[in-house]
Length: 256
Image 1 (cartoon, rainbow, N blue to C red):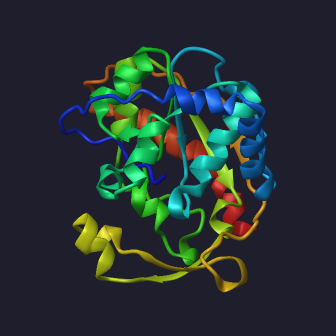
Image 2: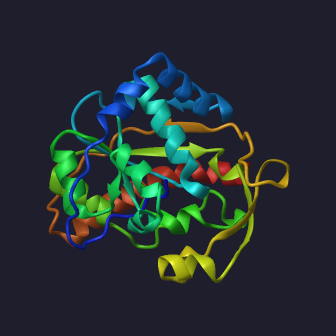
């Protein structure tokens, strides 16, 4: 699902993941479903020891088209780390009938700062993508280029909750599709702005199905929250440290 940077509007109700969903993942069939997602993309997780086995932490990553990377990374974390991540998603996804029921079942919530802080303080592992739809819907000539602009809400939330940020680099995720352009009507009509222009994208055999591009996720060392969350300088330092950690790895991917 397409996740967005943390915003500053009112707090939504915080959904709880469906117990039926979690129970399903613990069954043999659920484990096979996780393996199917992972095996389709030959996905691997490096540095899993950097993810805490308990307690709150904010996982920050780059993002790919249709947010398929979120599903793959979450499946890896459930299988290899044994934790069920909570996902911050773009609030406009709740406008899509059927889809909102699905994301509610997995306990996703709109990217609201106080709700995210509450999850972190309660010891949850929370995924956030500061680039949001800008990162997810970028063209292929921008592959592995972070689209964060100056968004720093995630850093402030980590400082307020006093939890570490764990940068995770997704490699191979921008190779699932060739994104050659955007349409300029449907996305902005449904979601309210040009940043939601839907992609013109080609996957496997020129179809909408994603290519089986091998995906490799690198979990980098945690970054400790240091400073006053009300200090713009402290927030910017944490944002920049997180950005630099991801950028150092993504630079190699762009070169490749």
